Length: 188
Image (cartoon, rainbow, N blue to C red; front, side, top):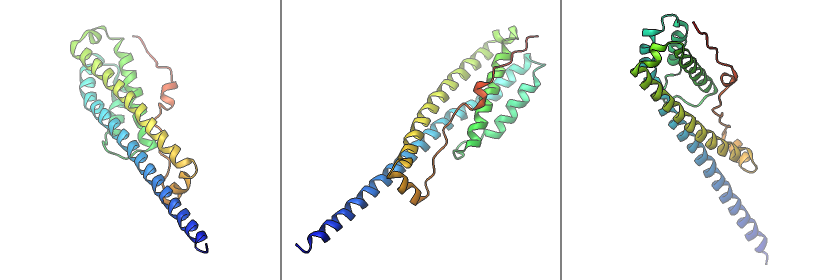
């Protein structure tokens, strides 16, 4: 009977350690899921980067007066074209701006009937739309993985484990302020 409290204490300590380990494994698993989802976004963004020069080249033939759009797209592309770069709010914001600039380009294409009818431009537009749909799907998957990860590290007792190993929340990939701006279409 003297050993009963000791056995109980050792059992409780072992169960707590096992629980902490299980929570730690869940944190790491969820973080890896979020990183894998980010990698999926990165693949889609790489496709977008590869498409941009072709899109700009075809559009430039017709759109002599739209140099500001081409300059902005080229600048934004060079800022964010770093596949595998770590997840950061700066990169997410830059990607959002690039998407907004591409949307502006597509809206301005509407003002050029010859360009709208160009078969190569139509193919590039369809490809861009498809890539943007894949990016949106990847973004939803990523944000879901981030939500799962952030929940695990913010809810007790996971928050204790996360704090003890220095794990921080991950940023969501949002549309940012760009999605709230009304696109400007300036007809000739």
